[in-house]
Image (tube, rainbow, N blue to C red; front, side, top):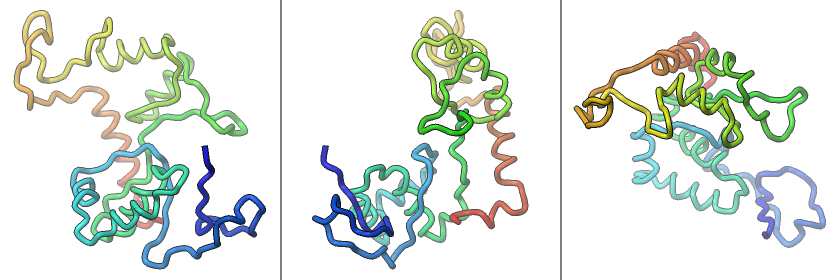
Length: 200
């Protein structure tokens, strides 16, 4: 595959590899941001990205076309350059990830030994897993209430046996997972210095 390089993002001297492309300066119309490729986006923000009433999302889409990993910068750059969305930014990807010491390029594969720390983190997601590990069965059974390859039951479940019929699809019945997520969000947004660290 061809290597696509945007010299505007790297303040290094020219090397023989990149002589075919001229250097260009960083943009001045917007500030670049990076972050995790894992994110949760609000409906209002996604609508802004689609409709883009000030054309910023489309401009940045063209700018990020030649990036090697645009999901690690596109949405972060859009949201942090629109003042009305900056107060909605929470700098956390909601994942439990365990790294080797010293860290390697990829996180450790999680196992049953990581279960307690994973649950105690209050994170909504975790990575990374290999297929068919016992820890995945434990998550399905103990945390999601999901057995034998079935789907995760929700507040809409009705009938006997449970979930054999669809009841009220708008009925929410928060469980322990929702309480853990609420705890994590409280830890993230309640500190006094939270707003000072948005888009920094």
